Image (cartoon, rainbow, N blue to C red; front, side):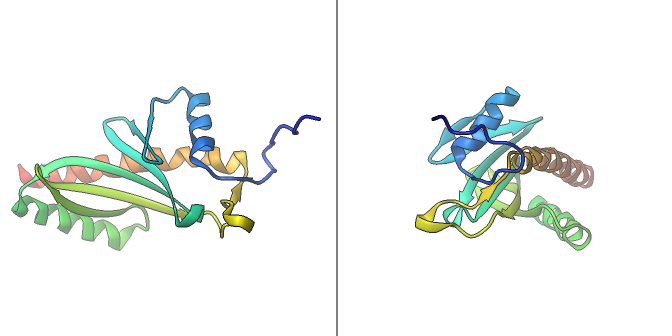
Length: 153
């Protein structure tokens, strides 16, 4: 007896493999490294990972700004303003060998893991709706980078 085909009302555990199946069906380019999906939308590198045993899914976008410390302060001022007016994404700066980079995170609660550590379940329709998070991250990072760049000129 074969398993029934999942529909948009059946809850199934959220896994990296399930996300990559969605990406494959959409023709997206990606790679999986250390349990994280690395991809990009527009000019924005992004990654997806499951946290806390699958209770959360984290979407992360990055602006490779390579800012000096002084320019990072300008970026942080814009970030503070955005945080006063919007809920998502959570922006912050990190320092690496190239300077300061800007990170944007959206962390969504999926649900408590089930019996035997099984990831929380979502429907196929819910999973497909998460593609909107990428569009939002791309737009928000682009808007922030444009605002910061204008102040640096």
